[in-house]
Image 1 (cartoon, helix red, strand yellow):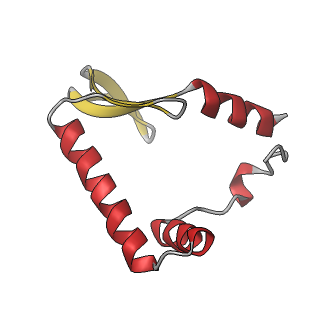
Image 2: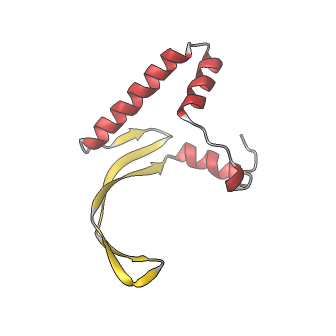
Image 3: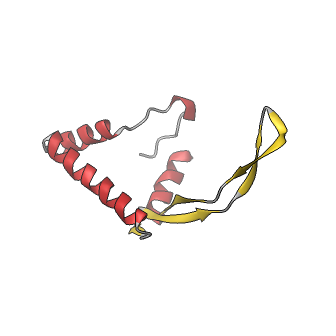
Length: 108
């Protein structure tokens, strides 16, 4: 932590598999056990959000479903033709204080 972020194009991606293996190694737990817990967690989050619930994790952040209004978009190849983008539900994430502080300290 506290290291400066490199060029965003060169950052690696933390996949679910990498996360599982990292936690399993760090905590000395079999990767299959970690996989089941993480998948259950993700499934429960999706289920809660689908039912319109707000998920709040202190110091981490808040997930909630918001409605994106209908808007008019443009095709970059033919800007004269408007495209109607319909209203839809989307998941919004707002980072908590602790996460914001950690991320900001990495950017400096």
